[in-house]
Length: 162
Image 1 (cartoon, rainbow, N blue to C red):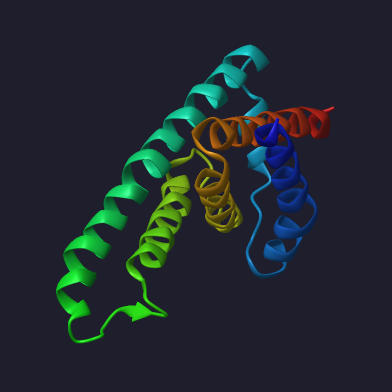
Image 2 (tube, rainbow, N blue to C red):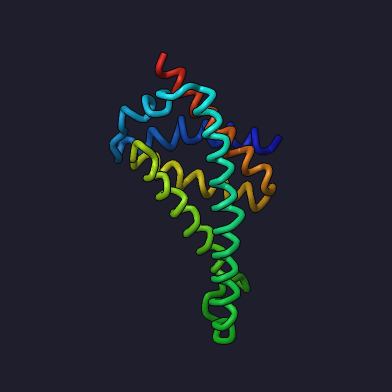
């Protein structure tokens, strides 16, 4: 349930707040809705479900923990004897892994057919939100949240095309 609620909150935030603010500074490509709605709804919906799941498996389940391990265990521990890379007895490697993972998550959205800077900013901010959900509610919640967000975006794009 937290995943559906989280996805709905994230969709509302990105649609009503983030995208309008980002569009002031970055160009919006009108082809984004056309690209989303050019395929049959079932095929696009299935692609969004599978794609969202695979993104979360790679970014939250593999990349973020791996970077956290490398940065905290391999980098922070050797430097802990001299007091470097710790803030209040906490390794900043976990924060760095979070930042690297979500910036990379946003940049990977440049691989979409419409390479929109607004989409990259939105995906990066969404990535931080997904990491929060993953860290506090687990794997099922983050996948459900991401899938819910993408399906709401698909429904909204189809609504705008009418």
